[in-house]
Length: 354
Image 1 (cartoon, rainbow, N blue to C red):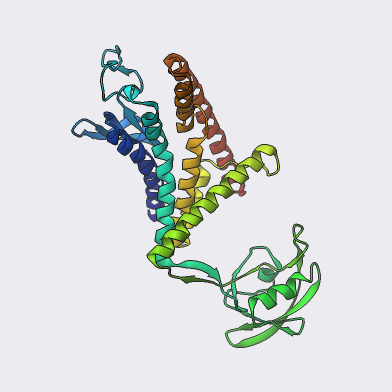
Image 2 (image 1 turned 30 degrees about the horizontal axis):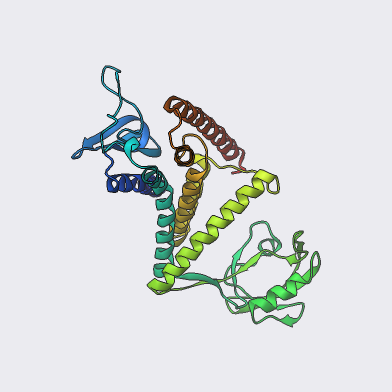
């Protein structure tokens, strides 16, 4: 039950914040909002506000804000109703920069959400730093240290007879011995014992590894410090995501896409490992969602921005029917991609590779 709630909360927060960005900026620019929806497909429940319909729909994989005049509307008889050209509250009657601000507000709000979540983590839980002691924090599964029986909390007193009082001493001694037998003196609950194990070679660095990580300590930050770290963390993850995507496109990195199933698994795992990891992971997902929506892919916010930019340069909009057709093709592509990655996720799940 708790796992399901953690997934629903994460998806709900990401979608609602994104659509809230569109909603708020549309209202600030005097645009009438016809509907604010969470999810797609048939409506489950809903209510009408002063002029906006609020609804919860069957498929919880997104949401939308329907703006008056942005798309052609249809009445109950299927007749097309187009907003009057002189209606000041119509989306298409606003200036190009106003419409662009409405479209860009959704992705921007996702980046703002990430900053806010990181601030909470740093201010309430603290900033994670590696402790420079000889105490083992975590073990990497399948590596020599775990196979030898070393446990979190154990102290590595020495390596090959050389005292290791700090983590720097410890790693330096192990890194210089790739693919060699080494003897560690381990202290567990006050009792010392010697273990001999063989290090593994890290192909990237040429260093010897046994699969241990230091203890992580959390130092709480002031609100101003947390705000600075939150902004820097968001910028850092944004840069990392963009670089990784560029490497995937150029073939430098293997392209690996995760669908809804993989995301649900990751959210569940982050929730089990503590609130700080859970909130931080939602922050990373929010950055990814914001960046994805800025890509010029038809049916996403980025493509709307491209069309508006073209309109601004040409001085007149593109053919509405052509735009609708391009967005329709983009929607079909995105649905097909989602089905493909979901199928991959399910195959990995049942094959034990996920």
